[in-house]
Image (cartoon, rainbow, N blue to C red; front, side, top):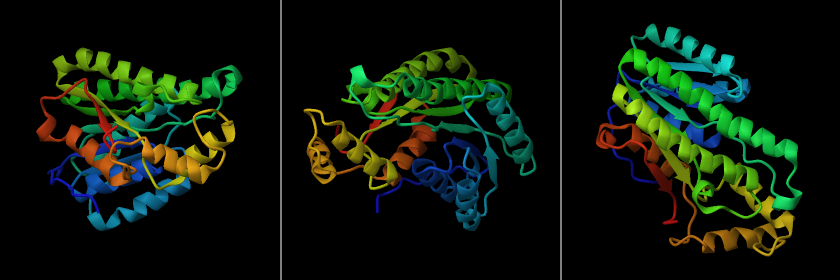
Length: 271
């Protein structure tokens, strides 16, 4: 169990894209526990309903919206619907966790499939842009807010066999820094979060299995050996936890970081 700082988000609300995934779910729990209303946005309607059911005990407003972040019109409609539903509880979207993403295939640069490269960029770059733009427009009208874009350690380190994902996350870090300058005059802070190795969970298992399957010089062909190779590359010799990612988001949204914008916070294991 990780230690959590106590923040007061009562009367506020956060919109989380990728809200049905592991990180989105952990972040929703973190904010609901501190009094925030939660807007969960994802393509998976069934999983959205599951997460919403889990949040009932926190007695905060919970909104679920199906949305494809690669569609500008879908994203615009999601923000409009969120504003209308939150208004019933006298809240607005004060925070946005721009978290929806796709890891892509694992392959060497010369073998990387073009269609998957395009899919990664559409979700992880264009999708982040659509949400960032819609959030900024709404927050300018409402007097400010805070946005956290989901980057990755892959966006600062250039990992092997992850050309599209690494490229997309480098783009997110750059997008964050430019948007932070553009939006600061309107009281909107924009930061990014860069998790490294987070687990256990589906993404961690998928990553080790696919790295093993590539057959590169960097990793063994046995996923179990790959797990240990990856963990051994971390100074603290452990995986980061989902709760630690959620804690990072909470800090970047909180009053304690009110002086921070354009920052890329790396999470897990001292990488």
